[in-house]
Length: 545
Image (tube, rainbow, N blue to C red; front, side, top):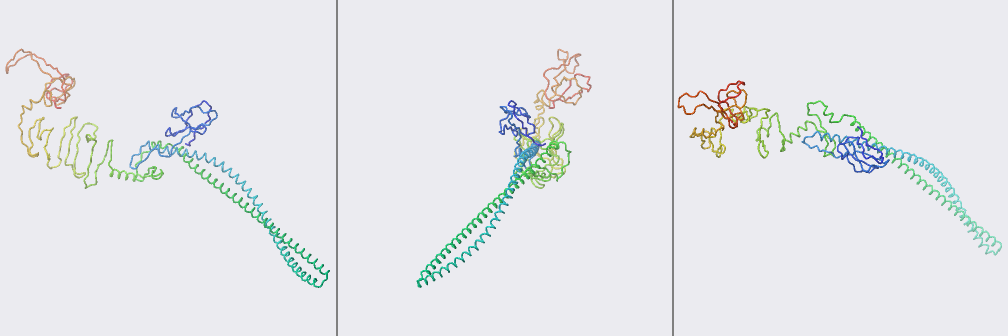
């Protein structure tokens, strides 16, 4: 679903505000009062409290700010916990929603700015059009001034011609005046003088006309320069208008780009919000057989957390390579339905198990029973050696050679049993002594059966006792029963003296029992019958453990 912050107006008394959107961490949720981030406390998972209460009409915004830095790191050849995977997916969705919201808000502002730019551009275009008209007028004035200058140049050229003629006349007048001086004709002299003065006046007039023409030329040049300046100014204004148009076009394009980006982000967020959460989709999906081409998505730390993918085939290969090249540390239970092989076939391998105290190898049975460990030279071939742990809480230990080879026990030092030098023992008593540390050679030891039997204390393993059953259950000979259900028993005859050997005696007596219940496990060694109706029994029993 699309993300929208909770924006309300304060009233001066309300301090608790709802958090209507989902979030990953409480640290990702904040509160702004009048645009300033304030301290918050959590009332519950959907309610935040600020103090003091925001004033009446003050803008209060409860917002979410999910970080872009991943909350969890997916490492090569490491398990991907479901919680970390879900957090990363939600983090990407929440961050996209927030960016879409921010971009959408920014796009609206850009649209307003773009509209203002368009108005400014339209005004600039009007000014440019006006400037173009003024420039056209300046061009017409410049063309007229150029025509006037051309005309003035013609007039000045005529003035120059008149001046040249006047100069020739003055020269002629000077020559004539000199002739008049020689003739002493006063009138001619006066007349010549007048003509000279007239020539001088014409010369001055011509000079004035030349100066006037020059002044007009300068004025025309000034008007031309002014027109050029105005033309340059208009061109500058035209260029400025074009720059503003280009800037506005760039801002429009930027707005379009941001709008497109916002639309894409909003579409992604909308699509993400409209679909079922990824954890629900995974939970509801049908179990499938994994194929090598199947793909898994992840973020790549080496590429600024860009999205990447790996296939099941590459994942299997990476796991295999990692296991083959690494020293694994397993704190749980390692289970395998197939063979576990250390090293390639044909080379030496080793399996080292250690935990600092003891190593246990279990058969993994769900109930008591036989368990054994087989040794073979070639996988799949007949086993040729076996260590057997037999059934029972205190199951016997056996070594078995399933082949036809020799079974031997040897040591470079001294063989011992329970700390005693090597030999064959029966009930803790040595019956054979091994020599030269070689089990192939044995010597019978001196056996003192009496001493062995006498060594057994009452109630010890291997001893016998006449006992009484404390339980009312069906018993049969050969069964084993707990010593805690047995007490020592016996028969008491009503005689007061020794009747002698081989003499029948007594006609009455009693069975008695008493003392402390026995320990360990005992086997019934006499006939007792199996009927459950017989509530109590006396029988001979042997302690077996």
